[in-house]
Image (cartoon, rainbow, N blue to C red):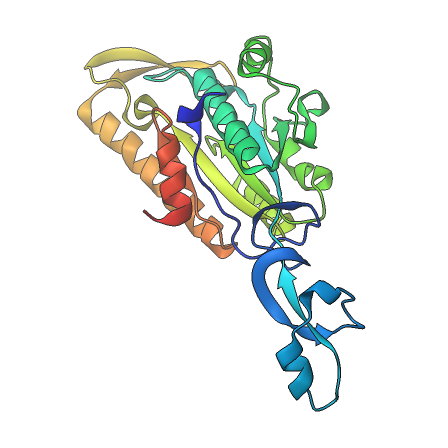
Amino acid sequence: MDNSLEFQYKLFGSSKSSRPGSHKSSSRGSGMEYNRLVSLQQYPDPRRLDLRASVTDPYERWLVREFKQRSAVSIYAIFDLSASVSFRGRQNGEDLMVKIFTSVKNSAMRYGDRFGLIGFDNKFRKDWFLNATKRVPLTADELRLKLSFYRAERGHKGLLEVPNWLPKEKCLLFLISDFHLSLNLLSYFLSRTTSHQVIPLMLEDEVEQSGYDRFGFGFLSDSETHRKKLVLLTQSFRDALKKNYNKRNKQLFSLCQQFNCKPLKILGNFDPKQLTKYFFGV
């Protein structure tokens, strides 16, 4: 396990999982967080008797201290497998996806949480679905090989089916995409996953934002359609391209804010410390 790729995370709110783990929970059990006093009849555990409270109870009940346990959660990496995500500019998109996969998986294993994988393009990819488990049957090298042979379908409609494959209990969802998708699709997905905690990871490359730092004619290729267009690369062209990206980003951030989630922009290389700062604001 590559410890250098790990990050720290936390679940906002409480988990309702009955599995012991590292996160705040609403389930009572053998934890350290005091909850309340209840009668021995309600919680028959004599080891937690509070004699002082019992003696002073006006109803003459035997009272026990109830605690909340720490619980485990399920972590899912949801990958946008459309062709544009594997774009090769200053960074290799496939390498970036493998690095993020490894980081999320290693971090989940360190916390004792379960890790699952979901993939989509214009369809929900059942051959990419791994239900959350503590023993992930997929290594980084196997994922890299899987990506190299994968041929994506144009579009992102598979995102609509993703909520149907998620557990009912609260999960931590890392949505990994370049977000060149319909805002209506994204809005539908976020509206269906309000019971979960969604972390949108926006993959961007400097070349996509402003083009290569050179002047002259060049071909622009659409990763989805593979169509090419001859353009004149000028400073005004690069400025217009960057302006469009900024406008799009503002729309995405505004939409995510409506559903109480905040995107994290991954510009170029991925540094796990970014996610630690995201969760803890340090």
